[in-house]
Image (cartoon, rainbow, N blue to C red; front, side, top):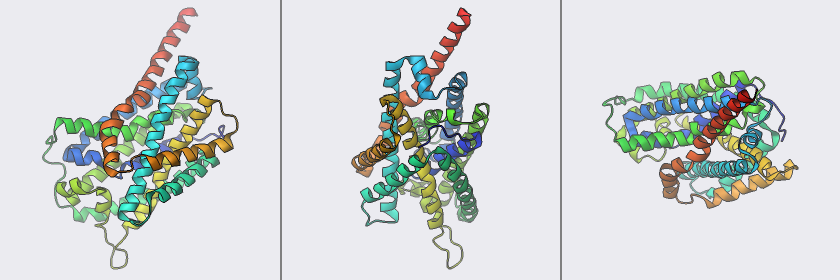
Length: 365
């Protein structure tokens, strides 16, 4: 694991898009809650994501020679920094465990029903740990190969879904309840753009820091557009009632696509690409967890530490969210609130402390 390896701002932006697009298309919980009003959640999250991006990039630009963990130490002091970073680590572990469990549930439900979920989690954890070991640069370059294939497959699938559209998914507007709008927006924010703090720990690894904000902002806009497209294609082709009852609405949507007599299961091809892309989410979370934990605990030997973190992620994922109902309850009611401190309050605190320090330094000079 080379902690000094650099990546480009474009690779970081593509990594952010793959991070969001891969995982969030699994359940479409916000679409089930808000239906035709899901654009509200997407618009809110685009604005909130860009705002968080601006806050984190502002802090990083003030300390271009330091990574975010070192910046925390400078701004908050050693012990308060350890507390805040430890809170982030807990949030990261919960997020990653939820993603491992979500993908395993998907496969054991619709593709491999006789396979024990722990075996699948073990495979994902092994792949993720190996990806962390070989480094960020390899992950970023691999993502540049995977994403174009995924986007081409996705756009072709969308074209074949259009003839299946039965209803107008945009009307009537503003029919969802206000609580559902709030819950749906918070849920989408929690699992997508709130994780800008995770990418904040990677910004010091970018060669040209001045280009981070525009590259990542474009990735956020494209991610929002992607989520809007899959939500409205799903609603218009399946109908509102079926979306409510489907565990994996977008997967049900792409099952409608048939190409002649011999390619009726084209969704398997897209799901294969989606699975590889979903690994980007898991690997990024585990990679950043390893970086932050190394700083917090003062680890010097990285090879055995990377393996230990992989075992931790595997064990935690196997013991968490075993029942599907628990997974959904935690994701919609608990996690959106518990993630506010590490994902929102933490970067705001860093920005405030940066402003205070700059004013103090200007006053002294």
